[in-house]
Image 1 (cartoon, rainbow, N blue to C red):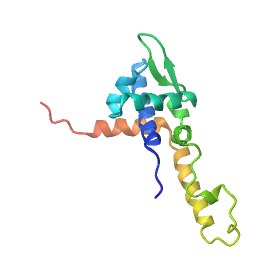
Image 2: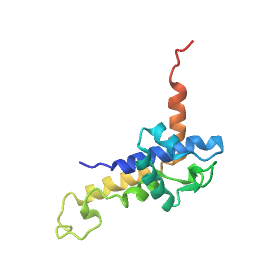
Image 3: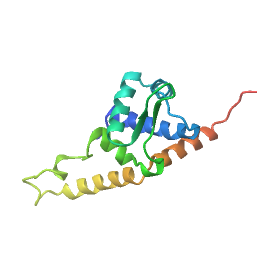
Image 4: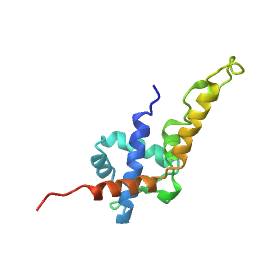
Length: 146
C-alpha cells in the first residue's frame, strides 16, 4: 500500500497552520502549533526543524519568538513540504532504479503515469490553497450557540 509517513502528513498540517496564523503577524509558538494540531510538542519540534532546514519555515528567538513561514504560502507547494520530510516520492523502485525487466514490463508505464499524476497534484497544490480550504471549511460550519 502506498502511504505517506506521519511526518509528511503532520508537516503538511503544521505548515498550513502557520499559513493560517500568519494573518496575526506574529510567530507561532511550538506549543500553540502542537495543541492546535494534536501533535506532541517534541514531534512538532522535530518537524519544524526539518521544515526550517528545508527553508520553508523560519524560527524567531526571544520572548516574542516562535515559527513562521519563510516565504509566502503561495510559493510553498505540498511537494516542497513532502520532499523536506520524505525525500523524493516514488511509488515503486523501478521508476528510478535500473530494472532488468524494463524493456518487457507491461506495468512500468502505468507506474510512471501514476507517479507523475501524484507529483502533479502535490506540485500544483500550495500551502495557500490548503489554508483557503481550511478557512472555507471553518466558515461553512454552522454554529448553534446562542
